[in-house]
Length: 165
Length: 442
Image 1 (cartoon, chains in turn purple, yellow):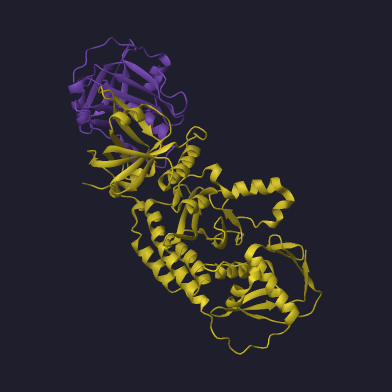
Image 2 (image 1 turned 60 degrees about the horizontal axis):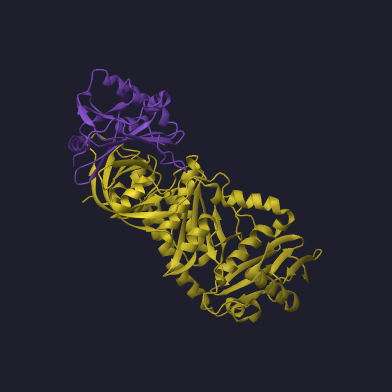
């Protein structure tokens, strides 16, 4: 499937930049040209200075199918959720590319891992070791997916879910 | 293919699952799943609560990927699933509805989460997401030895009364379930009454719950086990009944309080059936969250099957009356001021002096016994004569008489030191009377 490149439609507010780079879970979905979906847990998010693009950091081995899908279709969906408030937003891209990881991405992943652990541990019956296992990665295995924000949606459960951002 | 059974702990929802779908034009979508329910080895169900993008997608392209996590090992799995259909009533729907209320309560979503349907998916493949994992935790305990021990204990129960007590005792001994009760379905099929309990300050024997009311009532109504990890306010009997009793004030005096824990968090209600016929409900609870696992539920369902069969066998045996032995000399009611036994025919309730004791069939039985005692001095009775007494209005078949006698005997033991029932043989019992009785019928 080919998708023509579209201009970035939305710009994140400063508040949303803080939200997606904060204590949130990051869920990344893709689908292949045959419409078979894949999904993986993201390890960090970096928003570009113009607030119209974002880069999601992924564990390469676990995200192999997603990465292949993105290379094939350019399409991606990313959900950010804050467990303590149930607030969720989702962003989509149609021009996603797989990029080399930048030197400072490792710090981004480390910071997200700590922030998300601090958020989740008091809320769920699980140990720090389990959460570290879920968020496991090796620096050399990190992969970055970067895309312009073509669409954004509120995804907090309730009557407002699905509204465009 | 790895079957769903092998990853069942991941479906408990400690770490929420998430689901990826896509539209026909190839736009992916990802969302948290508030509830993922085990259906069988090849099927799972997702809660349908809102008409959202996930739902719009699966209706036009019924393939999705669900990611789940094991909260003890940290392992992650991806399930390739195919949407089949949506159920809006029945056992699966009711199980998920009650459980979702608990999840909503736990996550601050009460009033937002409401089950519209149970979306059933076939699991096409299960992929273990690469990565290291931690060793299994204590949740992986093998329950087969405990099931065997309980089963052997129950097989040795000689009558219904000991079957109820043996069940609850052995569940504590072999499973560590400290708060439990057994409720029987009444003759009308619309109410359940407690005949045995364990682990409560007040036994609650004789307390009633309407079929369909709360977790126990839903389990009974739909003949399906209900297991929840977090208490939902709308399903907490103990709290709700206390609140109602306070509102009702004096009218609540003729109700026996339900024994349930006020701080209950985990609950498991398992229907006890004989074939398709509901006999009662076995109920367990705990102040701990997530006390009962899928495996516990399986174990209790298997044990409940045995209880159902044994209840039928033991009830049949009780119906075969033993020949009476020589009637012993029983001292007549001893002295002291007579105590009033008050009877209200409209609901067959019996009060001892001013204290409510029992109502319904058990109340009518007690009234018959004390009348026979006061007028003729009788103390020995048979189940058969109760069955033949038209005044008791027992149904011709499956009358639950033995369970009613157990209930009456236990209420008397708890509430009264001058009246009691003692079994004297199969299908026979004796009324023990320690004071003069003055019978008063309203």
